[in-house]
Length: 250
Image 1 (cartoon, rainbow, N blue to C red):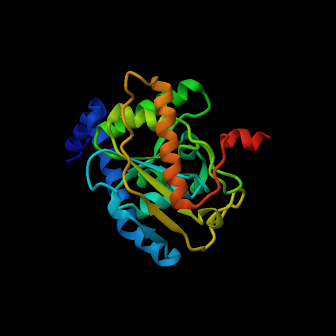
Image 2 (tube, one colour):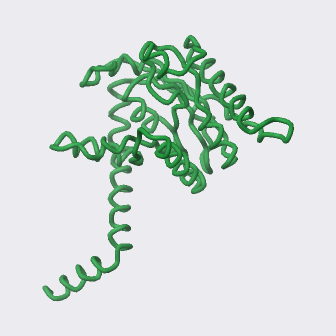
């Protein structure tokens, strides 16, 4: 028995695919627990108003492009969406020490978040390429075109990565509006508050692939502005012509 156990352990160490499958199994189990237990509990406590869930395609690649008001946004959308949603999350969220750090890493993993490095132009390009691969696998991918959280509740100019993803994968873009998540966990507040929120999923958009008469960069800008306009129509936020980082630095 002991020799058999050691033999199996040896096979596992020599074949990284076995460990990979086991890790994937743990992630699937965690995600199932979150969907079956945490999601109903969160809906019972916070009683969110969810509109337009039927606008999210049940299968195939889709981009969920949302406004961004709070750290909690990446938890809210996967919990109320009708299918699993993958978000990219800062790698440091998965590296924090202590019990709280391990719990945070477990929650983000269960919600389908993928750790990425941030802070450089190269990292941004790598993140978009990773997102493209996620969509190529037929999954739902969540993105915040504003790039960072709005600190004053207004909707800032979108960055064109969302249009690059739509053009390069052919995935439809579902605009998403979050209303009230900034009251659950305002910037600087550690513990979430119990406040009612609204999540609206808009009708899918299919940005037109750039024609020969329109430069690609300009086509991405036009498509991104169209997506941001759809988000604004759902959220009712005041639109800003500048990027959120520029407004924060002013």
